[in-house]
Image (cartoon, rainbow, N blue to C red; front, top):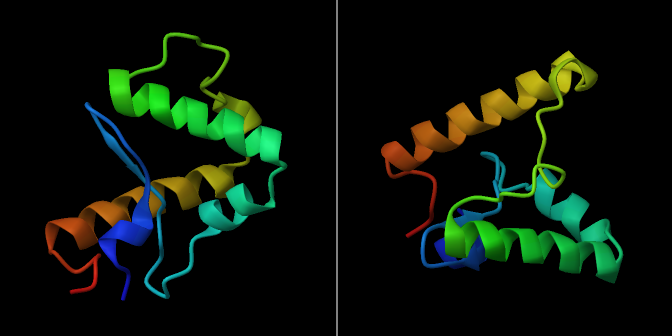
Length: 97
């Protein structure tokens, strides 16, 4: 089971940013983040901080809608992960005791 503390990437005034873990306790996004260079990780954390503290990012170049440039299977995976996360947190089965 996943412990809630290990999911938190950044806790801000407006939002808490969490890493997503699948049912097998694997986090592709955390693995991707871990493989980034120190400078790239710092940039990601600065974005997390801005989102967590202020609730949104005004600089549209940081997050943009990829639309048709995003492969359909990747978009489908992301949507399924969001549904899975929402379902498991609603049912209170996402985090370990």
